[in-house]
Image (cartoon, rainbow over all chains, first blue to last red; front, side, top):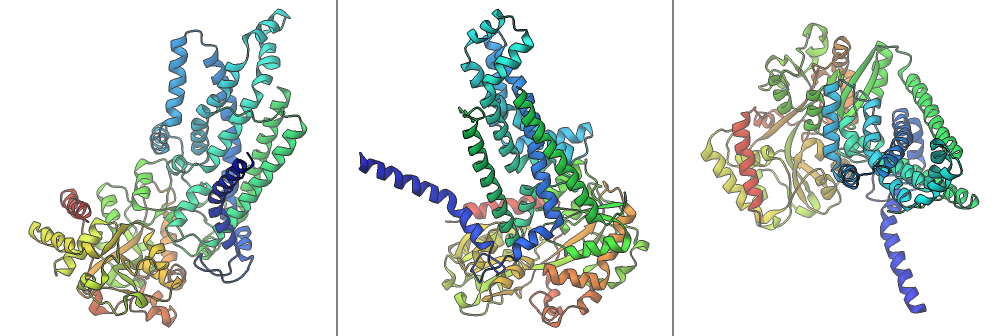
Length: 267
Length: 357
């Protein structure tokens, strides 16, 4: 038994090593006083200074965060109502059709979604930039939220609602006092999924940005043609630690509030 | 429910606060230029950012700077509309296409007095006669970058690539015009040829190179050669300059049989909002001092004759990037071959790739 445990630990360690090695390699070189990642020449913080003095880069980082937060909030709201709607469709066939249509959007390649949005936005005359990126991110996040919320709804016993009705709750009260609290973990799971999808999306954003608006993934991609400067390493390191801090913070908050906010992620 | 609303409310507020911060940063960067803005669409890392600041200070125009990574990506954005790019910097074969598709605004030369500083050799070329639509920004060649230590001798011609001791050593860029052109040049033909027999001959010759070819790759070619994973490759001069800066064992040569001369030019797309500002920007970049500063920063070759004079001697005298006349004479600019012949080049190149071991 103990021997088995050991092997599984080694296996786990190896997997994590493979997953994290590129990130640590990148972080290591962000302190390189040389110009590139071919050899480590000495310790310096110059690249971090460069990040903070590059206003354009900071604006791009903030834009990325703003888009992620806003699109996650809006798509969560839309997605929750979408999931409720799908749940309360009586006809089984209709329900399956709606669900399949939702899934098709998740599976379709980003490039196709991006190109379609570009064509749509230019036809209806939306200026490419902040609005178009936000709309596109909301659009591709909604199906994900729906998928995260639906299992929670399905798992909820209908007797709960019947009981609430028997006790005299109005429709709105049923929704706000019974259904929503029950599916809260699913809502948060959807919110965080939408957040991460938006943060790391390249393909869709690539098509729909314009007029000086850019997000981090698109910017780094254009830079890659010339070889990525260590400034990007420094920035990535900072983002990694901010993310880490957020995850740890979230862990403690959810522990304290007894797992109420806990992500009951059921994929 | 209340908790949920509160949390989402907080997130929204954070996003809005950040929006205000971005707005502030944006304004502080622009130096209060007001509504007079200029959107520049350029390759990634292809300008000295200090020049943008200098331009903003001199003219009071705020510059919005945006980058692209390929001619095709840029073309798609501009063709599709929905954007207001005032300046774009495509390569010559794309300019051709953009002129044909009526995507560019004709330049008003009277607003570009600094044009006189340009080297006449780089003006009035086949892709844009009379420079009606475009002004050269940087130029370069196609050639061989190689690791002196690993190859152990000097390379001078395309034919050197066929040497037996270079087995499985060569990296090629994945470009039909470049590689077919290399085959044509090595046989002494024009790389704009429209003779089927010459093309077939070139393809046949390329086929015999296949034991020496390690791989046909894209942008990663720089990394592979820079790290010494392959001793030599066929690349554009700008890319070569960049890796040579990082690895001193590398050298670059424009083969003596001839090669391609390429250009990245500034144009004003039809989508432009601020045509006057765009002219001002072009004129600003043509100023010898600015051109020299930019060339020194980016590392590509400047077409600005007066700017060239201002370059530090070790840059200006580097014949690999500013080749002497006897070399430039043998360089050719790509003609627009038309879809039919371009298709033929692509076809032959594809066949060549498929027949590699």
